[in-house]
Amino acid sequence: MKYAASFSSGRLTVYLSGELDHHAAGEAIRVVGELIEDNMPRECVLDFSGLSFMDSSGIAVIINAGRKMRSLGGRLSVENPAPQPRKVLEASGIERLIAVATRI
Amino acid sequence: MKEQNYIKLEFPSRSSNEFFARAAASAFAAQLDPTLEELGDIKTAVSEAVTNAIVHAYPDKIGRVLMRMRILSGNTLEIMVKDFGKGIENVEEARRPLFTTGGSERSGMGFTIMESFMDKLRVRSVPGKGTTVVMQRAIRLRAGMR
Ligand SMILES: Nc1ncnc2c1ncn2[C@@H]1O[C@H](COP(=O)(O)OP(=O)(O)OP(=O)(O)O)[C@@H](O)[C@H]1O
Ligand SMILES: [Mg+2]
Image 1 (spheres, rainbow over the protein chains, first blue to last red):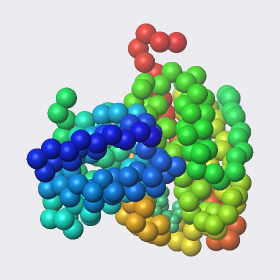
Image 2: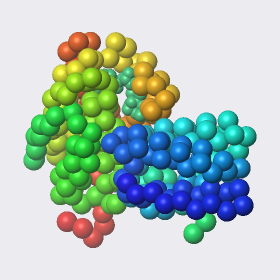
Image 3: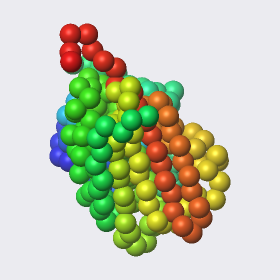
């Protein structure tokens, strides 16, 4: 997994790329959590455009980031998932809790 | 049902083997000429079953994981993932969406995803002895192929 981040006017975007499975998820939870704590954003976007694979371990990454954002009074969203990660997001029902959007 | 081809694998319950298990499933499934979406579904279901063996069956040790894949008639792929770990007390409860014993790093969606991405899911488990998950997925024959 690779990570990149950008921050401007209260909005933190974290770009995740690679395969987000259980092997990668522990690190992803930690990296995203630290980026949120360091930047204290009002809004956090997880940009999944670089994710070539995701399973339920990725759902836990989103839930953990969502919990962190809620404790700061902010919002989390997920953007640009490819078809396979999108199907996992749909099957998990996470879209009832967290906005999933396509912007590219 | 006539068994047309099969492969058996064994690996230790290390998380680095999750990638390998998905890649092996994808390579074996290729002979059924699946679409990218079907391949994605198969990889996802395998990842869930193998991750469960790694995370839940052997919570604090490394154990054996067996994987068997075979082609059944009707262009159907069957995948078995078997462990010899701690087993599941109540399979019906474990299969419910959101049920997890895994804490905040798990979401309780693994069985739900296996069920929705495959045609059939069978789970047999004996506490203290291990768990066997068998999944089947028919790959649609595409017009103009074979
Ligand atoms: N191979 C196994 N050995 C022992 N227990 C298992 C096994 N597979 C599943 N379980 C039990 O069934 C529960 C539900 O499994 P499921 O895959 O649906 O969710 P999860 O693994 O907890 O979370 P997720 O898959 O979303 O990360 C697990 O929490 C665990 O208690
Ligand atoms: Mg699971």
